[in-house]
Amino acid sequence: MDSNQNPVLVIGGGISGITTAVEIAEVGKEVILIEKMSYLGGNVVKFNNYFPKLCPPTCGLEINFRRIKQNPRIKYFTSTEVQEISGKKGDFKVKLKTAPQYVKNNCTACGNCIEVCPEERSNEFNYGFTKTKAIYLPHEMAFPYKFNIDTEACKKEACNKCLEVCDYNAIDFSVKEEIKEIEVSSIVTATGWKNYDASKIDNLNYSTSKNIITNVEFERFIATNGVGENKLLRPTDNTEPKKIAFVQCAGSRDENHLPYCSAVCCSASLKHALTIQELYPKSEVKIFYIDMRVSGRNEDFLVKIQDNNNIDLVKGKVGKINETENNNFALEAEDILSGRKIKYEADMVVLATGIVPSDINLNLNKDENQFIKDDQIEGIIPVACSRKPMDVSASVKDATAAALKAIQIN
Image (cartoon, rainbow, N blue to C red):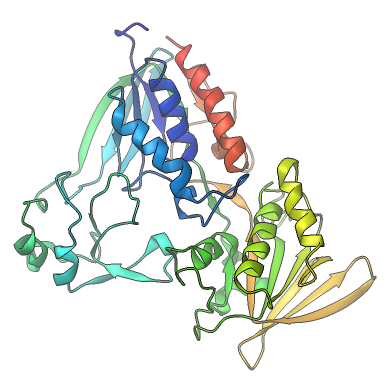
């Protein structure tokens, strides 16, 4: 490989961006990986487990983090976003903005700062259902493994308690925002996805109760390092729900919200239902769906669901959810197979909201749903959920293909 060639830029440090970067570097080409969050891992690191083998995030990500650390051809920058792209294939100029990182890389994550920090902030890693101190470790396998400071919650020099107890001089409030320009040969946009805003779906009343959550929030509720630490508890009263309802296509395949299928929601809800049954065998789960769309090895989940007497699949769309006097929920739905309308009362409701592309303020060709189109100027390669919804397994395969395309561009 010609060492004079410009490196490849990978925008986004989720599972697809990490895979792309590692694959490129391991064939001998330089790569720059950037991530707007303060840690790598993207959405997958928040999961309880993922398809197809139901591995916990520590399984695949820990190996990839080690590969990044051991490969000098990979340079990574967190808290960093692209401001501008110019040029052409083989010779792109990219302007990057890195937010101030007040905790330096020599942080040992000893925790002394947490003990003295007087301020709290909402924990975005648990979607706001828990709190941390203003100085915090994002999660136990954070990469890079160091503390962060929430600039909105921290009083910085007006407090200085964390500086006083840091034995390694790892905190510096004088750090400023950094702007720099780099030259790269090709660009892979692995900007990923976010969940559709469930508060926009008026009839499902997501905003009225904390006991109505989305499918990605459920991942944090059931995870061993999550909200309930492997216990499923209702946020309002910390009780274990006995009857849980899953509402498929919450806003999806709906011209008023998302006109497309997100491809992963059915499999995810089946996975969640089986997880509930493992933890609470006497619980009752009802899954309301329009069409049950699973493929490949994920069809095994459907067979297990059909064999479980405590999990009921109801083919029909939920039209309305109302909170009852006892803080439960009355779901009104149609049962297509029986030809009648039904009502079901649940202790907890999980909305299977769809995938939408992450916000990216770059001048790229996008389709009507804001996914990045494949027909960019030569040298810019969209990958995985930046271009269309797909699960982790498909994203990794797509990332490998993107790496091959990127290294062929001089």
